[in-house]
Image 1 (cartoon, rainbow, N blue to C red):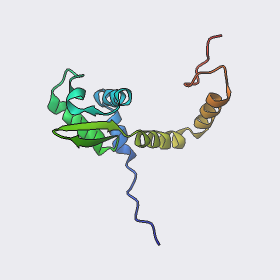
Image 2 (cartoon, rainbow, N blue to C red):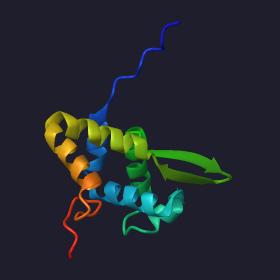
Image 3 (cartoon, one colour):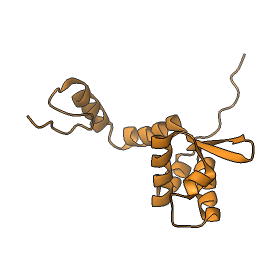
Length: 121
């Protein structure tokens, strides 16, 4: 039995979505707050609700957020795997040695924190 054809990977859409600071903040808010309603997201910004809706549409189109309906509300959540895969694929292509070094240092060096920074003694 053959596998169904895979959709082409559009990491460019992810990076276009990440280029805007409002969209990056939305992703951070979803990471911290879990699933959020569109109105809750909009209330965190000093821009119009339609503008936030457009930003959410870009993030959804890039596969970075998922939405579901709950009555008359639309709830959004972060698609962490999509973000990690796209950024990881780029970093692996551009600086593969650094990925290995960072991973190794973070996992094996007790003098470093989770970001690879030295822990103060």
